[in-house]
Length: 388
Image (cartoon, rainbow, N blue to C red; front, side, top):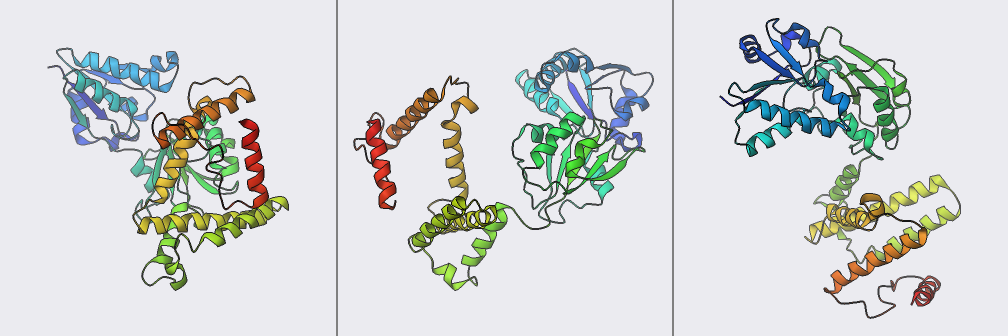
């Protein structure tokens, strides 16, 4: 009957195949593999006719294009009277993009999909380094190609992380550069290769030497321990929330948005002094004081059901993306003058939407902060007048 069966082949050792997977493979006559580059393939039943999609990797323009092509072919094969048996490394629902795509397309085609679970690479990797994933705030799991594309790692540095599929030195190099935006060069890492097989290796090395390692494969993962001193924004939020909670600090608990205003202005001035003095250590400290004010104001707003720090971050993130269509969209900018004109047009559109659709800002000098020092306010007024 038309049917897609997806089976997980486990982390690589044949003894890690589930009984259900072994029985299914023993009774099948034909098998389609996402890739033949997996240790368990050498131990599959000899009578099995095996096909692979490896040639698509050589022809595809991107991994996503390859995964889409595989999914389309698997669904087409599944519509045959005999259906299709499709096998992937590990567990079908762990780090397997093709499985997601197959389910989506098969559902749209009215085709039944059955999944035979397998042991993923996660459990052998955690066993190899002796880590209980819940013996802390929980560990993070991310694909190496995702980290490699980022400019700052989307990781909580206070929690351990497992980065999967460092299949080449180039990917490892890109991962290293991204991680160094949040971790020091000497941060200790564990490189895990072929976890759960007879060739398992765990190699300790510092972050700066990550791409110096000579051997890489599809079975290579990277364990990133947390930083030794709590450094995450969430950690700071918890401290501030604790200070304002019952049993916290009496002074912090009695603060309001307005009472913190003068100190915020003072901290801004101290940060500017650190900038003028070209003093990185002082600047680091003063930026911390400013960050404390932001988190404290957001905590007060959270308690008053006004907004949360997540709302603040979401709003500024959306604004930055919206105002940079030449970076995050498909707008092309030929010059700085064109960039400034485009920026101004976007800001005017934002103000129209904020004031009411179709309404322009009537006052040229509106939204100039009253709290600005007199000289800075005068400079702002002159600058706007010159643009009028």
